[in-house]
Length: 164
Image 1 (cartoon, rainbow, N blue to C red):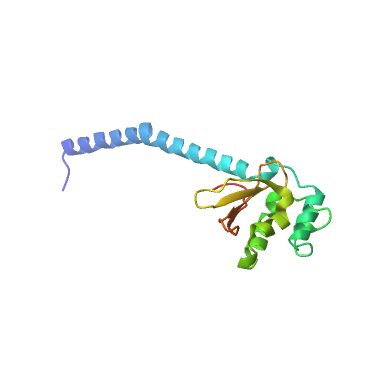
Image 2: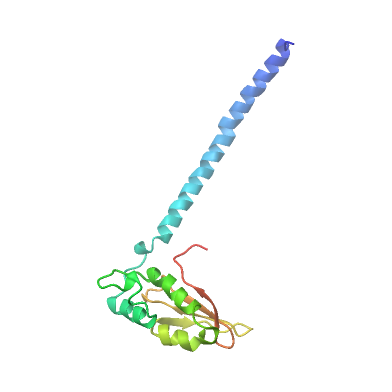
């Protein structure tokens, strides 16, 4: 079965129109989306590179944290002459405080270990919950936040280098 010249011509014109529409509308849209995604990835990579936004911790701060968290022998960050940025200690801080027995997950224990680095505590909300921010570097770039309930027990720790 052979198509008539009229049907072949209509299909040819339709094909040309589709190709033109793809070239004029779809390809620029796809290109714009791709450029946006590349720009976003660049911003995320820049934001997450903490070495661009802060400086290493002083040796006395690293020694203090290593001693108080009892990680002097187990952490690479506690070795002599180690150059340590605050975010490099975040995992060890979270592990230490998450592994404490429930009865020790209190404001007083956090103050005992990190009180030197307390920046501020927010006013309690209507339920009595509040957040305290600790900053090892003191530049307010990468703080550690402890969320406390009205009884003074922490229930959440946020310490990260960005993102959601």
